[in-house]
Length: 289
Ligand code: FPP
Ligand code: MG
Image (cartoon, rainbow, N blue to C red; front, side):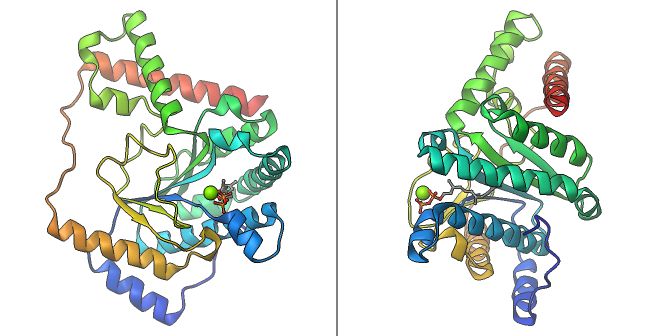
């Protein structure tokens, strides 16, 4: 299945999407796509086939988010912890990722047409070279698309991301680009892998697990957390609309807690521009290897 689907909504789906769109639509939804292996067991298929169904569901979900006017989607596709799974499963997941990121490169025109920018968040140094090359190419290819941002957590954990942000900042201090007094919440956010993302309005986890599993710990401090028992490959537009409806009820009742940071000074701006430039230079290198 492709990343960007053309399948239209049914009449009833379109009607419900329009009703939901008359309320406040979240800008960013994050998903912990859990339950693929239990789905595989339930349907007597191999684990990797369960993950494949998980990918197909991701493509469908992207389509629904797009229809709802959601600007940003972040998914947990592979955690650093997942490297500890059996060799067979890790290899199966890597094969799947290889195929899907290769397909993504072939969908360049469609991604441009729909304005989809793909960003892989994670410790790219841990990813096998061939997959990393395609990931880098995909990020470079879609970097100017601005309608829907898809962040794929791959070789990602939040703790690793926060360590990486801290290292970036320490290097900045060591090189006299910034001083210790410049370190604040905003700077730490601005050095995360998600530096160009908004904080998620909703974090959805499927499969009945009620945990964060080291996903977006810093970013989801104020997100609505929506746990559902459904296994990820069985997730439907109705579950998504249910989560958005709950968000709308809650945001009507609660005060707005969005952080209002002060503008950073010129020195910090230059430092952050450099951090960005170095990341793109690293991606250019990965894309060539
Ligand atoms: C969690 O279910 C799912 C994963 C570890 C992998 C998720 C990957 C996909 C949905 C495919 C996405 C691929 C790309 C390239 C974006 P689980 O394995 O923990 O299942 P369980 O909870 O039933 O054991
Ligand atoms: Mg699981």
